[in-house]
Length: 172
Image (cartoon, rainbow, N blue to C red):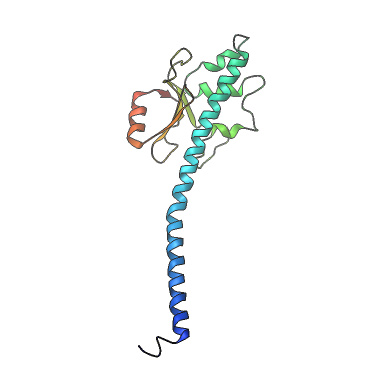
């Protein structure tokens, strides 16, 4: 073996190069993984928003059901299904929680915008397997979330999402 290879400075150089290579590999993995993880977190937050909206609506209707006009919060189609929650007294949605009406997966917020769709027809007397809300058609890069009357939120793949959209179960 050469005297140069056995020199302590050579070993230090080799170890330094190996350490930099390992660090570069970790950085490359992080660059790939972090955006995907962030998008999945936004899609999950979107599902949480839909679920929270439904729970607010359902609890409010149950609490005030049969008294005055409050029970009408369970009726309506399309976006109006959700907008009515801003008109209740006291309002279920005000400036403190208006971000529930925005889809975090979209990444762009427009003040006063509503980025979820409601049912195409009244769901009040329908079974729990009926969709009561979903993402606006263009909120996610692929697929979308669907909220069912049972309270379950399902994330659909792009193919399932296209089929769901074509059936027209949610309306603008």
